[in-house]
Figure 1: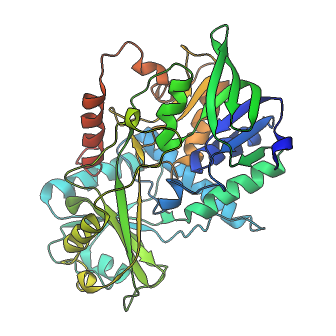
Figure 2 (figure 1 turned 90 degrees about the vertical axis):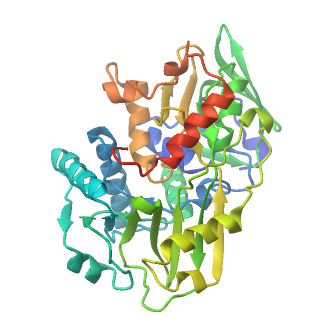
Length: 412
């Protein structure tokens, strides 16, 4: 789409061309709302945080609401993959193993199973011998319990975004890249105009799906939200004998790691004991802050993994992925309308679930926008929950870092 193709006015402008922005466009279009424009400041879609995702989609969660969201996401990826055609999400339903080293963690796996049973997600506590057959290269010495979810899997983030964009375009959504949003103007207290480096556009609604820049977009409309970018990384090794793409995803909460095969290499990432966050007031909308300590963190992940996957420390790294996914102080997504700034709609603060959760979060967005009585859970995601709260950036960063560090915490 060229500059001349920018509309003078439109109903919905979505700011951000990653998984959340394109997923929101797809969800809205499927719900019959096609008067939508997606703006992305990079030359193409899925260039920043979404492009760095590991692509894991795990459905085992600590609450029924979160589990249902993840189930909807997995079902959506499977449906889009089965549809074939020119765009698919690269969905691999390889299943997943969640391992416990301690008695406390084993009890937590049993608790998670009860949540899954409640909502109808098929999971099974399996013995170590069966787990070993599922992942022959792993060493299961010291593992007390294993939870198996056969319908979990992984997908390719760029393919997910490309699939959303393909189907959204078919339904009339327009996408423009290389457009920098410079301001949001209000009339009568509500969103009315988006100013860009390529002109102004009148609109009724702005959906803020700007990822690590979601704070900046909200601030343009006069709303300050504690959306904290927190460093996250993973590495992909060169090929390792015995690995292949159909091995299950593995999560090892007691050492804070996840892994899957990436071709014949291993992809491994995790959650650091000492989280590193950024205060978004200290960088601008067009800045992408460098991610420090990449090699050191990846080396630490490999050292943690070595007892379970002997030889991984000696493998060369083929790729390091790094980025600033956003976390919130309470660990919940920020989805829905702002009552303080009518016309401003949030789709952010994804707490490292922006790609895997994008289908479910898209449905939550539809519920928040068009259901007169959304569920208590969807209401709990509203940006309005931060109105009237006494918070400051240092405390918001500390709280968000804690959510990150305790991502695999017992009971989380």
